[in-house]
Image (tube, rainbow, N blue to C red; front, side, top):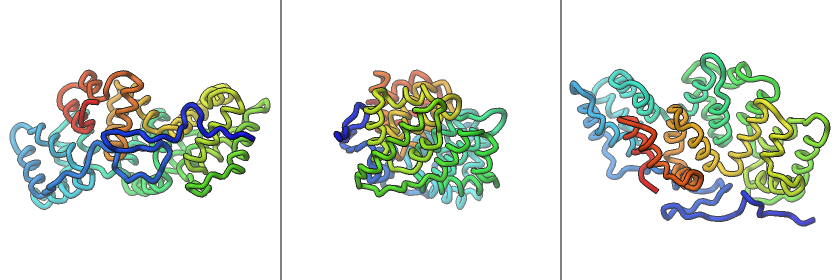
Length: 344
């Protein structure tokens, strides 16, 4: 049987971004190579803490100094600054920022002072607080993090809120969507990385195909396959399924599922196929939502924001940098531009 390894949206190619190579679907790239925020050198946390202390100590806050320092240091460096600030001022830096600032700018700087797993836990909690659940943000965080990251986020969630993430997901979701989000939270990639298992590819394609061939589509095989394989394998499965069915996987999901489970499967598949493209699409759709923009810009700034920028430019014919200049104003604009880093 002929195997199609080169379908429309999964091609094993390497793309150069600012002299950095990105190979979609590969998990082995050096952490941070596609981030816009890199380690600042020479780094002097005591000096940075003193500058921040002075910026917050006057009658008016020196916003430019805060932005210049906090958007130009990695998260690990910001944690060192927080320790140095505490030693200097005998106060918690996040608490001082919260008191001195307000609005969306305050929320952005507070996000920068959280560790990455704390920030993801914070976003998950926000998505489930109050009336209704923000399924899109919930899925964004869960679908774009590795099994190891999700385990760390689960621990951070319990430490921050005294609540179990799994229990909150159960109480805030229902039916097949609950099964999906719990499977994503606990996902383990059972197949061997770096090996192409054609027999398992055939088996998975058949399972997905059979699950949507009857009168009532069955989401269980889709959940099981999509949350227990690595992205290389799943992209091959998706290509084969599209060949067999003669239509894109998004249309297959649209035609056979409804409600939250349809949203969940579509989001999961998009993140598997191309996470930066999915995030660029989300930015395009949510430019008026500060929390979404903040979540992606902060959350991906040390990971793959360069590649998100490239995808955003291809998607909209406008750079993310110039779009931020147009859509945001004042201090928030300065901070977002600092993290975005430069024009494309």
